[in-house]
Image (cartoon, rainbow, N blue to C red):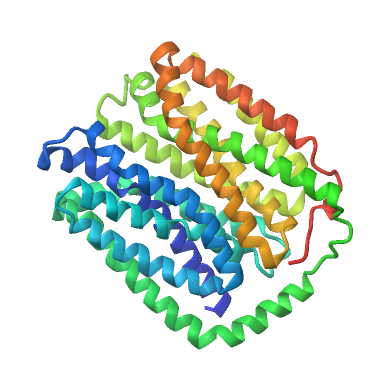
Length: 400
């Protein structure tokens, strides 16, 4: 395996662990801590809030440090820091102690998206497929969190759910440190050559075009974050209400949700392939339009039809993720690309945090039919925004 392939594997594993660690506590709180600590699920969940805030806001500082210092060095810190923080969470004996540990997990988790994605696209001309593969690893971290955590709880107690991935992450961090120390010179030379070969003049990207594209990126990022969080967070409850004929237990609901998320993750490969070979404006508009159509269709469905359409709309929702990342990678110069990704993910995670109370309010007053109508309108607004992107692909590139 070549050096750049090994480096890419580390980055993919980082994305997997990043999302995995952020969701361990959700399952631990629901499956064990509520019993051992005599607290309800609703009482425990707020202790995770500081970690999610740090996960979003910390991206700005992480991106700035990476651009000024070392992206590879920040990935080492990510692996080791998040692993040690998870081990610390496993040692917690009180809600306050676990809140501190979860906040540390959030701080180190904030490193990955601005830094890891900037490394994935660096030196590449075609970034769609690499970002898609990397995105699949992240989505599988989301999909695997409940299953892996539940398995570790059943076989080693809730503390092992933090210990085991924590130890693995620390080992990965140490091995990555050894890897970059041995290979950094050769890797930098190879990356530099690739960057020069794939360099496209940024003269065509006028200030006006740059501002317009980034306006579209941040608008669609915000609205897309609302759609992503609403669908991924609410899907188990949607299935519990609409798949009653064949998913009547919590375990079956969980497996069907895992099935949908896993299948939908493959959408990123399809979209990554398309944006590397076709107009990104056309691909983006098509994905947004499909989301709107599937949400409208879903409003009244139940049973097998609801399951099939859920796979379809999650396929479109997951498919949008690499498009914005490709746009950022194309428009942002290498020297400030980590900060550009940081701003994108601050917007994403801020909107995602506000989506949860919105789901509860809408469902409590009108049910999921109204939620799907809202999401259809949101997807339609993304479709309209994508029409503002430049038609010429040559105007959607900056220096690699």
